[in-house]
Amino acid sequence: MDYRAPKGTVDMLPDAASEWERISGLAQDFFRRYGYEPVYTPLFEHTEVFSRGIGEATDIVSKEMYTFLDRSNPPNALTLRPEGTASIVRAAIQHNLVPPGVAAKLYYMGPMFRYERPQKGRMRQFWQVGAEILGAPEPTADAEAIALMWRFFQDAGMPAGSMRLLINSMGDEACRPAYRELQAGFIVQNASRLCEECSRRAQTNPLRAFDCKNPACVEVMAEAPLLRDQLCGACADHYSAVKGHLDALEIPYQEAPRLVRGLDYYTRTVFEVQVDAGLGSQNAIGGGGRYDRLFEQFGGKSTPGLGFAVGFERMMLALQATGAKPPAEPRTQVFVARVDATVAGEVFSATQRLRDAGFAAEMDHLGRSLKAQFKYADKLGAPLVVVVGPEEIAAGEVTLRRMDTKQESRVALTGLVEAVRESFSAEERV
Ligand SMILES: [Zn+2]
Ligand SMILES: [Zn+2]
Figure 1 (cartoon, rainbow, N blue to C red):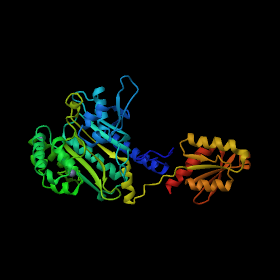
Figure 2: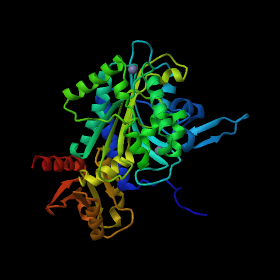
Figure 3: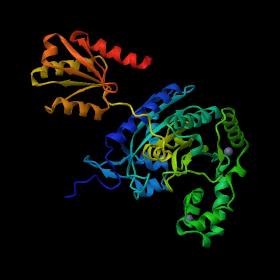
Figure 4: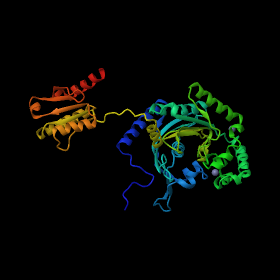
């Protein structure tokens, strides 16, 4: 028996989990500020939600899904979600979240599952935070989503110079079919110089040949026709409007005419933020795009949609690589120390009163000596220690000790919360 976490998964230990909570808290603030509301869907869905939504020919559906049968008779085929958008669209149709004339702005965060070869920044269980705008056809919606993602990375501590924002247009049902034919023809013509998978893509998904990392394929695809040059008037207008709005916000982007991203459902705008340091080949920390046909693929009414997702593990690796240390918040604000066991009850109640008043308070549960308790309080980073001894208690008092200056003062036990609050606000005034 191997009692280790399964391959491709990690235990998020306190340091990483604290950083995760910092980033997810920041994400929640951002989404709220931009008008998004939370939505949480099940971790598994009927398999068709993903096979239809994401596309049978994608790597995700053909190779990477965790699919299993449940115990119903006949059994249901269920799949652990490999991404968030398909579930959100399924839920939006089921609960009619986007009636005509309404836009729904929704965000989610949680684990996703893909059976992939694990490597740096690519896990079999990974965390994403994502947002979707449903029912909004205007290019301002695309630009707003891109701006939100960009500003979120910046606020989380990523210097703008360490990131690259790539954008492209995937066209729509008016212009993409003709381009697909053109691309399929190009692949057939050059099949001898392409890898087996790419030559097969002429039939399944010719645009995905742009994603192949094989150097020979990259060389061939550099000469392939670009969708950018084949966009219909409406798609070209939409794309240039998105770029105009990004220019107005001075958000630096690069046009990437070969950026197709891995999913079949995208129409018009796609975007991705990449970093150079910390991630190797898995260098995208977030990305998304518009999916104006996805609702219809689920049998819903035609509804424009747009969204993006941020990969938490990759973002954390990228943040580490910038060397910028996140502001370390002390986990404990006040430590309540006891001089001896006779005052254990007073220490216990005082600690609880401080917590009830909103302070991160901690006490000893191991029967340590006073000296060892001071050492432990120091390790926890507690700036303030309350010392409780039998002599003080007899006088109805306790001692407050500032750990940086070693300054001590006696305060009334009944006024402890106020004294602690005063001590922290005095510190802020300095
Ligand atoms: Zn290839
Ligand atoms: Zn078009």
